[in-house]
Image 1: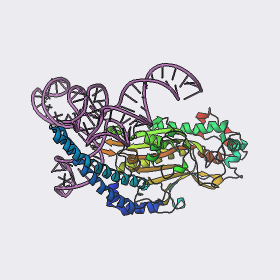
Image 2: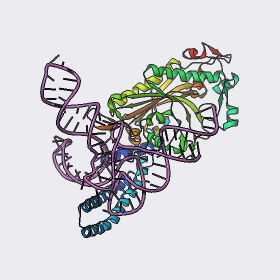
Image 3: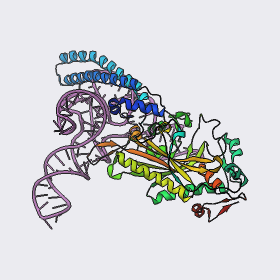
Image 4: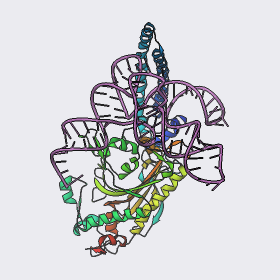
Length: 432
RNA sequence: GGAGAGGUGGCCGAGCGGCUGAAGGCGACGGUUUGCUAAACCGUUAUACGGGGUCAAACCCGUAUCCCGGGUUCGAAUCCCGGCCUCUCCGCCA
């Protein structure tokens, strides 16, 4: 499918009206953008566009005349005259195009302003807890971490993972694999009950979906790139990319909205710049599987907010079915991604970390992704508008196995299988 | 990977280098007719950006877009080159 040329980033009109809002957004999100430079380039661009269009109009008109002229001498004279214009037009066009080429990369960096109700803060330490569910279990024995449990019970083999693929790699085996798959299947089944359309998606995509969903250019270094290919393709870090970009360059029928998609996919992340962080175990790894939910809805802030609550609830339901203690935090401004207007994280209790660890991330983007993806719909009034998009984890594994194994472990080193997973494991109740 | 064919509006499908933003049909929408529905008839039916206009619209003008990019030309949907995609055949393959 061809890439549409007129693809826009943030709404430049909004930026013109309220540059301070965007400057502030960049500051809050710690993104380097020179908003003043954007404005300067933008107004220069407008001038150049007008100059070009005026010249081109002249040329078009003159050319049209030539077609009507019968007398060959007159015709020759007219052609000579327009020929002189031709160069001017071309130059004007080039000035305009090159200004545009300068502006686009800047525009790609401009962030979506955080919503009013997002708490201010510099990083994840200032996220605000809004809910706790479940009781953190007191142990009357010394609990083991998932790495130890996984190795003892023959579920996880990190050593050999590292041997084959380097750091942050692993094998799951035996019941470890089955548990992993059970979790994914439970999550997917719960989403099917809610009417989401299941999909199997490409995990290797072109640059456009990456850029469109906001993972490029900021964050590019987090992706694995197949640069041997022409054009290059990239491994997605989440099925969000493929699901959200599914309707890229399309104009949807408003009656078909909202679209609710769910996909299970492998996810690949380079984790560049995290050396020394979370090195133990399955917390931060290069490859994992995730069930992801995506909503594409009408351009309506209130509707977006409702869906945000809904997809958060969907994920909470899964964690509750697994009976894992968790909390929900509102992510503060400094921890928001470029395109996110607001985000909730679900953090699930992980005894070895003696803390809640992030397992889910629910984001709403308003039209940020839709603009970059040229993802639109025709509204009931006949107007074409950009969609709103949202996404959330349903479950990501093996990270969630950390919580399951550690919370469900017994004094004798065995692990009880959560009831909700037993149907997927032939009724088995215990590992070890 | 090799050899061919092709990419036009919501869809189908015309299109000679100039008056083609694009015939015709279908669909959709509005209207007339009708006891209701259907049929028939009339009309409307791309998007983006810029300028003008308005309280806001309507509307008017310009530019661009017939897969994308570049070239030839006074002028390109039409000619040439590159790319992407689709289809057919051969090879390879889970």
